[in-house]
Image (cartoon, rainbow, N blue to C red; front, top):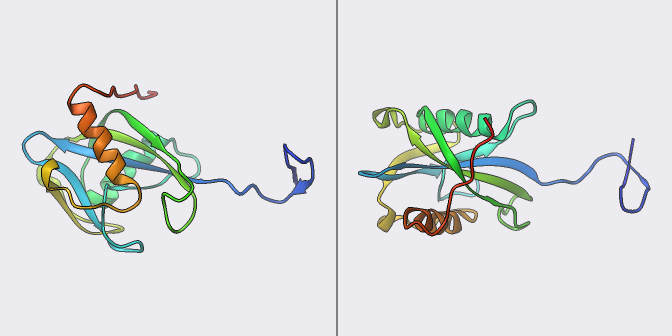
Length: 154
């Protein structure tokens, strides 16, 4: 049993947000990779998923990109951390969003929780699930030199 750091009562479990990792996989000729979600909430989203016990957020990002898009990627940097309690309608999550490039874009193929995966030009991006619209705006700011990427812990 653990003790609450605030009230010092015994608790059996912390009610913490679930950590996730998302990526903006970018190709300057084709745009960004979007997936169409197979599960609720349905719609278009950046590829990503939950961090598993025993793996780093970076490892989760690389694994999730392979599972959802078929792509092996190189992480270029951290775009941002998004953690508003209502960002995911299912439960409280927080995500580290990376900018990445695919090692071979020809291998793009939907898998795992994605019913579809495709490149989309930035000017054609539809409304996205979660708070991914905000991440796309931050990515556009990055491309314009208005927002830096944070380094990745290697």
